[in-house]
Amino acid sequence: MEQKLVEIQEISAPPVNLFKDNYLIKGIPLVITDVANKWPSYNWTLDSLCTRAGDNVTFVRQNTNCTDYRAGKIYKIRKSTLREYIDDIRAENSRSINSYLAVQNIKKAFPQIQEDVPIPGYVSKVHGGPFMWIARKGHYEYCHFDPDDGMLVMLKGCKRVKLFGCDLSTMYPNDLGSKGKTIQAQVNCNDPDFKVHPNFCNAVCYECVLKPGQMLFIPAFWWHQVTSLDVCISVNYFFGDSGENIYLTKIMKPPQWGAFSYWLLNIVEQNRDFESFQRVLANLSESIPAFFMKIWHEIPTEEQVKKLVILIMNYLEITELPKETIKLKNPPLLKIRGLLWRS
Image 1: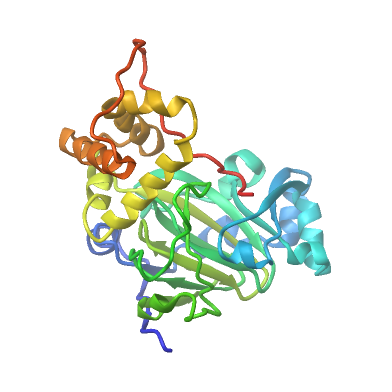
Image 2: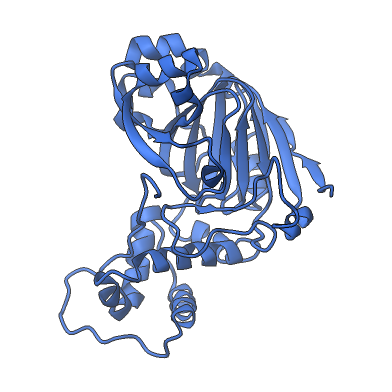
């Protein structure tokens, strides 16, 4: 079976307003060239990172070369110095094949080099980052979507990136309640089993090979899968539209609404078995705005809150919310559980 392939558009240093009007707001992926190649971090090498931050302790994912990792289901975390991780990659030993330094907050983990990574003007309102990623050649990162717009910047090596839009039916997301902030697809995008995942053949694949000095805009709630074609160093940013409600309004409409709903219900399911969840339900109309203020600094409208309360109540198959017996100063928050690892 052959999928429809679409090459992602590439533009040299577009004006910020052009990017925001034609890509960010509309949710259209874009490769941007001739910007990051002027950054100090463009000159990073494994040697220079070891010299400047090699003794810094970081978190490394384990078991990253197994089938369950490729389906986004299981991985462990170990602590390592940056130098130890890089030495493994250079040695191409068995530990390097099953390891991945992923989503490490540069400001916290590597403060010595944070000034090398500016925030580009295309990133409107930062939700998180910049984060560093260092991958061995051949690493397959499981297909998933993030609840934020993303900008992936290649500094060394090349990555093949595949994007598949926001549709859920073609991508077979893991069951609700999966740990972490992202939603993972069960499909191996490089070697799909169409007998197990027949609808995947209907997914349109937007593809590019991202080269050093290039950055890729990944719209919020778009499925994406990344394969390292070389030993790679990259950074990324999670962000949203500027303002207090523009981003939330964007993702609560098609085409993102279905994926956004699934993501929110996944967090509901993560919290469902905890005693604190009943207090969240009792204060749901206040807990929802507090949750979005914490993660995105967004303020939902009353209509948006009502829509999300109905979504959650319908999912839980309840017709009324529990009554709060204790007056709380602040509404209890939904918690995103399992941010470091899944096991």
